[in-house]
Length: 232
Ligand code: DX5
Ligand code: ZN
Image (cartoon, rainbow, N blue to C red; front, side, top):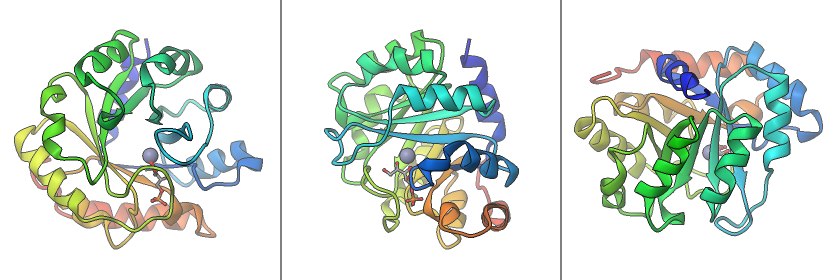
């Protein structure tokens, strides 16, 4: 089913994925329309449970509402302690890609298998302070690695350059793995992430805090495309 969307996500790279985290939730559908009209093709949705991270956002009803409103692939970033319990409800709500945090689970291979069995793309996310070696066990079981360039939990934080080294290392070890970066991506940081070999660039405040989403996306896109994408 939705796993077909994985090919469209993979094929879209390099791409900018807007995060709606800091948008006007009172006008969520209009915000999504503005992001679509600005030229973005995949939505990044930040789900937080107030337990794995000290912030709360939204759950299945919002994902389901967005699914009815747009045909954009939905890339769902689960910053929650129990991704297994909520994986099927999220897929039923319309998620196309589900990313869980390696820090949240005991057995990332088992969790990746359960998500994959639901028919969607599966990603694993890693916070800046977690050793990259924690991923080693599960890299053959996932479609994507989400390298966090801030500590998960809030938009608008400062980019941590450790993420660049991580993208570079993962890219050299896994030339075909889909790599996504999330946190503090803006005109000053997107080029370095692209040069390290990143495919998908989550952008929150650098788009949402601008007056004109089309200008912001187009400037980010230019900066991304003018960087040398390394082996990709
Ligand atoms: C942070 C979220 C990000 C966030 C990015 O925990 O995962 O997706 O919204 O926002 P900026 O681009 O403002 O760092
Ligand atoms: Zn995110």
